[in-house]
Length: 95
Image 1 (cartoon, one colour):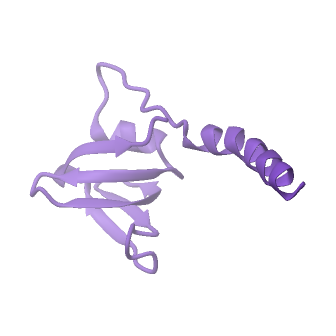
Image 2 (cartoon, helix red, strand yellow):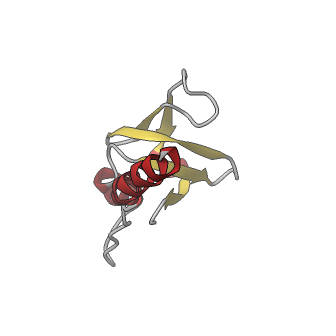
């Protein structure tokens, strides 16, 4: 009986988890890093900087020159402001 309830609970959680993880990048030929980031607001992203460093966390806001990242991965109590011109790539979880 407990096994059946656990299996049912897991089955109900899977579609919800899959829906949350499905945040496609949505790219158009004329996009800039800022445009891509703006569409990802509120999502978890990983920024790869031109220096080779990676910063991952929840994308809060995209400004004209800076990006605000909160809940940094591995440093959840910290936030970061990243210069848009220093970003080489935006990585998002697609599925």
